[in-house]
Amino acid sequence: MPAPTLPAAQLARLIDFPLHRADATVADVERHCDLARELGLAAVAVNSGYVAHARHFLDGTDVKVVAAIGFPLGGMDPDSKRYETEVAVDNGAQEIDVVMNIGRFKSGEDAFVRRELRDVAEAADERIVKVILETSLLTNEEKRRAAALVVDSGAHFVKTSTGFSTGGATVSDVALLREAVGPGFGVKASGGIRDYATAMALLAAGANRLGTSSAAAILRGAAGGN
Image (tube, rainbow, N blue to C red; front, side):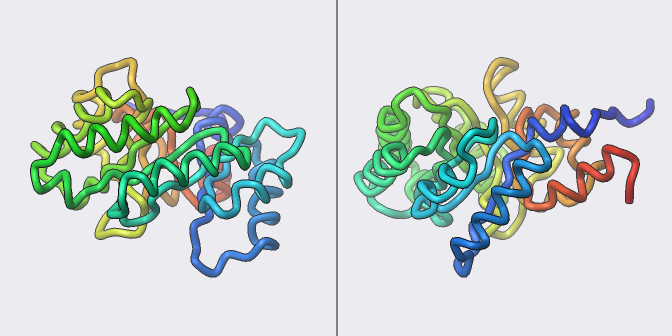
């Protein structure tokens, strides 16, 4: 069976374009937003301190601004995540990507994690919330359990990775998460997606959003370029 394909313009609307470098400057954020606008991407994802800048640079466009909350480790107090979400929303964030507290989850504190995620979802005030599981640190059973918590929390997506840990998105993890959350819930593949073939394989496995800093290269592949 031939590999699935997707036109560049349609694929672009499935891509979140992250800029989470510690040394990213305001000028870097502006260039990043300019490229996202040029490519017609779905969203730019930035650290929460740059949300207002990104909204300014993307004013009048269809490109959304995603705020990274609790990024990249997820281990801070739940009240900190809630407050960071509230500030990001006040500054113009249109979507939220939050890192689950992985250590508390692996300690078996499911009620703690569920409450934390519900607080973030509430603070997001009906905006889309994507919960980063960091799948490379979880067993398959833990991935399924985490996915169930996310579905129950009021969030809208499970997301594979921050891109800052031991591994990124894999086809097998995306397929597992899609099975776990069912057909109507969001699955975002993120981490290590650098070419069109990989992007299409992850979409075929069940992802309906991609997070990648290699958007330009992927879209060249969609258009038949190198």
